[in-house]
Image (cartoon, rainbow, N blue to C red; front, side, top):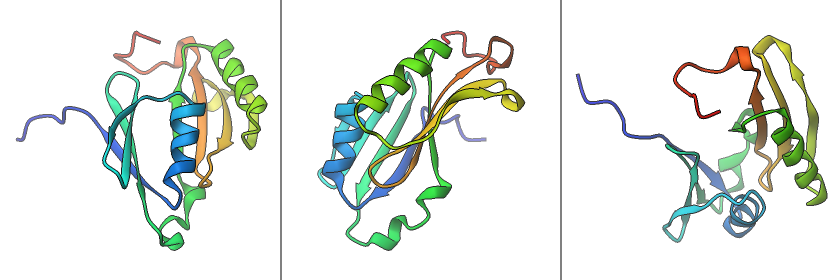
Length: 135
């Protein structure tokens, strides 16, 4: 059996890398881990990365509504802080923060400049994943 992966990178397409960078680096304050010119990779938490690669073909991102990028925060108050912050930045709000009892989370949904869904969520104390004591 091969060794376990070291960390994940999720790659998505964008038709406007500048707008995407403005949103993820400047508004969400995610650090750029690597700028390859046509792709920018952002550090997410301790072990994950999101990469956005520019494509001039708009049909490359035609099903953006089927993709949800989730950022997990420490608690309900942090979800509300993010919501207030993003609302002030005129980011499109899909759904304001609320409890999602089935999954034992408190979450809200937004749209990024390319139409991808961004979720900000906090786990209820009795719904946290195993092995993630830092939140």
